[in-house]
Length: 153
Image (cartoon, rainbow, N blue to C red; front, side):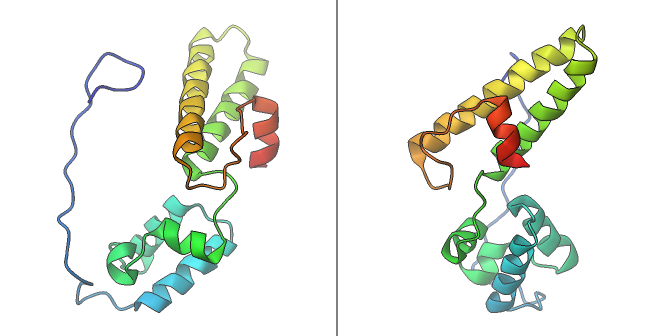
């Protein structure tokens, strides 16, 4: 598959082999993992950081293998899903940083193009989420930098 904003191809990745159950060396049960997930979500951690923390600090290789549910499903059932999905939120933060940089450096044409590409990715993701649903993103959400800045902060 080609990269999004270039004509080059990306390197392919391999998939982890699926296991049939919880590995024997995992010390936490499914209920304990669910509790840790909800505790980290209450602290305001994004889903990507929750998964990395469970992997690195608590030796849980895959939340789905231990609990039987995906991380997003656990957050949805508990009502702890964030207003904006993590990928959109991180792209909005990046666009805000680039805009702040451009306000002090107006002739930086390379970062101006970077801002255009970042905003294109945001619009593409918002269009995908509006079409497929499954998030707390309002269906009438349209990206504008000022409104998104308030939504993220």
